[in-house]
Image 1 (cartoon, rainbow, N blue to C red):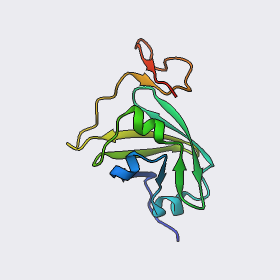
Image 2: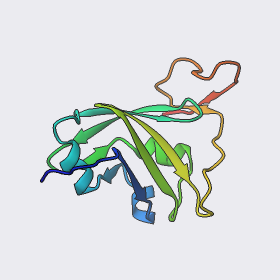
Image 3: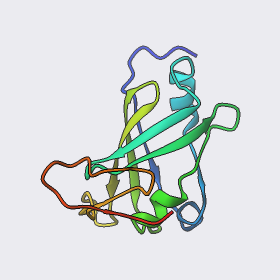
Length: 128
């Protein structure tokens, strides 16, 4: 199916099951619209400099490798993840709290990151 106008973003309303899982189902319409551009591995970047590498399975429309993100940011039922498409494998991710505002991000980076990506800011690496 062809779509005449497309903004390459999507959001996921987080459920309790999502927050305790290592995977996330991506909306069908987004996958249909971007099927030629999406690669098997994505890099998700959070505003505070946190980056995580996850795997995308085109057949199942699932991202896997998300449990660290869910745990590190203590995501809960009712929060929203907003994915902003940057290019084939890069997305900016915003976390919206239950109150409708973007959460205040802790000064942490993923355990796979070797240094602080935020200039002038002290950040902690979380254990994997």
